[in-house]
Length: 556
Image (cartoon, rainbow, N blue to C red; front, side, top):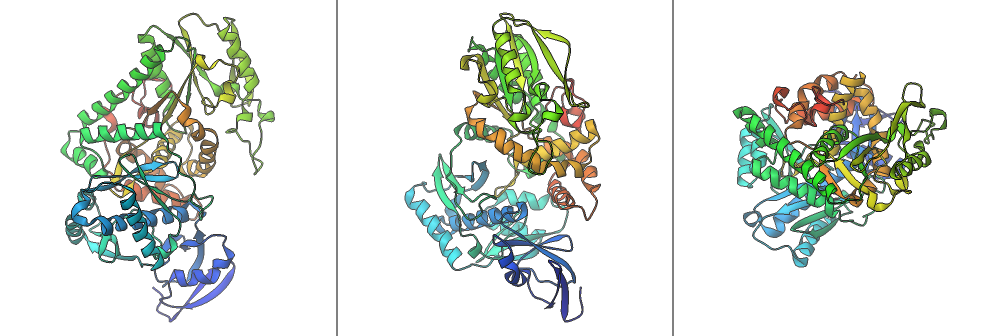
């Protein structure tokens, strides 16, 4: 704490002096003209601070606008609070039942709603109107710390049982709550100082709930067109329904099972459900007699390798002879690999694959020819032929895994009826509580971090450093093709973050302070605090989770 009456801050190479007690938001107004988008969060001496907080220490200060990952997520989180408060005001707390943020879809969030009221155009208009009233009034958001006993009572009065469980399993005896006009809520992350900054949103009715459509990080002041993803929606809702059957919808439910010691049944049920889904996909493939190429694609750390092995086993039970093919073996030689805008090799783009050779080989196989199969040597960066050949018989099918497998340009020479496309991703539907979702990207990042350290010796810092590039490649080369798949497989396991926790935490603590990756490491550590750690000894050896924590029966 600075006992002087002034504070000295280094901001963008300039030394600035301010009175003690000035807020970060007041300082941000001076520098807003130097940022292309509204400032959302401050970084003071390596610690993120909300704009309504007061400055009381000397040091270095920088700002993050809405185009940054942290700034954008702060806007999204504040918009969720705005929406939830508006629903409370319009419908009334006694009639709400439960308003739950289920998952993200396209550019919006899907909320389920079981209150005593129908969702129609009139209700949508009323909610939108109330939200804009708070925006126009620049309704302030207040933040304060409460003892857990007091916070628990508040959540009970506001009919928020999931947040009561959050309080129960919280290690700290206090919790920070946000308050708007007497309404209290808890959110994992930062908030904007007032609702006047949430100017861009759209409320839509969708299926049996709401869509809160919001800007993207790339265009933070433009409402994009919401594009429904019916296959993704169905997959997510199916997972949510199974969570209901197991009685595990939020982290508190999972922690209760771990505390009670009855989690072995939970593991077996989760695994059995996945195996049934894999068997159903294999059965559907068998209903397409012309299929010779099973094309599998999904974002990083989706469990594609384990899934491919398990699908192959199911195909064998139906009389097929599956052969694995990795699209990576068709990489162009390293010197021919395109480079990105930074001059680095771009292994994510389609041009990094020898598409012509792949199509030529697949067409020859389809016509019954024997084909020499390549193997890519990642150490030398060269494609090699090691005497491996392949010839397809009447029962043979190729199980092809790769980032571009769902892109028709990748297999343009193959007849449509010869291909069966599968999109796989870890579409987690477990939430922290009813208003705080767990991003699927966080689950996959933890998976990759644990696996890459175990198999490649990569540090957590290195994995975090590469993640932005990985995510960019997914958004360009995988997500646009997900709805074109014949089947979608959800590889998320309801227990997996509890299983990953004991492996991930030491790696995250090793990220050095002062590095760009440090902030993300601390965020993930805070996220993992919601979970109790789970003993992994009872996880089956063919589980997708084993691909990441180790001990898999498959060569992964």
